[in-house]
Image 1 (cartoon, rainbow over the protein chains, first blue to last red):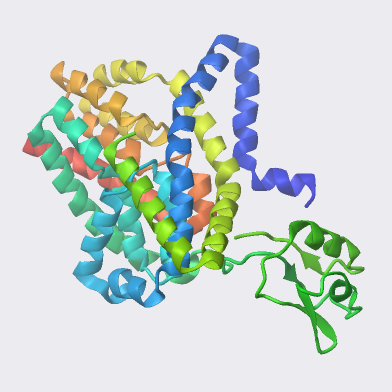
Image 2 (image 1 turned 120 degrees about the horizontal axis):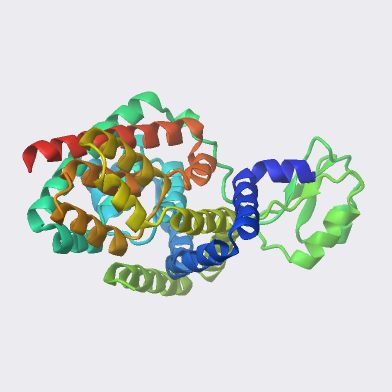
Length: 238
Length: 160
């Protein structure tokens, strides 16, 4: 990947870094303050994200597709809506913690509408937050805002599903482990099979990946380097 | 750590142990997937976090409160909703702050608009959301959330 491409892919990071550089030149004290302020969010991320990733991956492998379709799919109706609200409300962590979970659920057949409900309720309807709100703004304020928010989410999730279709979401590369092989580029020299026979097999005139095993990273790297047409790449995990 | 975070940890650890007992290879695969997901999101998450830290310094919550408190209700509502969109203030700061504002006699309409866009609409999380769900989904969801945040605020102004 060229540097330019990399920059383009991380344009937001570039903007943030540039803003910090400007800040440190113009107002170094505020730059330090900004880093300090970020500390709280880093802690928040570290407390919740590892467990969210593990939970998402475990659910990805163990949760049967039919179950997701039944409870969160297009035909799950009111049950799906209720289920999505509960799922979003009992969650913890910032809204971006909901992203990997929702991507996984959508891949397994959850409807767009229910994904919007989970994301939105994950963001606004948190039970610890509701307690806090009642404490500072009164029970009545909290209750009315909660009811209105639930109604609003029910309405705009329906609108979103009318506008956005499943095909508008990025197609998920199936989560896979290990290398991928570009069979169009492969010229069938067999070097990879010779180098790493557990991982690569010949399938007719071209090489193929033996999907059953977990790759040995070192051996895989050597095999990638040895391929004369660079048909093997280690995309890692999607 | 609040009780829900702890609960998620407990559930996940139990799930992990059950998974390990049932199928070791599958569990290993899951952990690798989790690591891959973490690596894939790390840069985006750090960008978001440092952007929030920066915005928090440039737009301190007290300044926002002072500004919103001095405007007419309409201007204040739109401004509050917009500021809520760009910033992400933790709930334990936002609620007491808004509580003081409302206590000081500021209309609830901008207060509610701020509280709702604060969490539901995200400019800083937009790039990551776009990467995961695509432009159309992200634009529609955030756009509608913004509109409905204002509607919620207006309705609340009428009720309370």
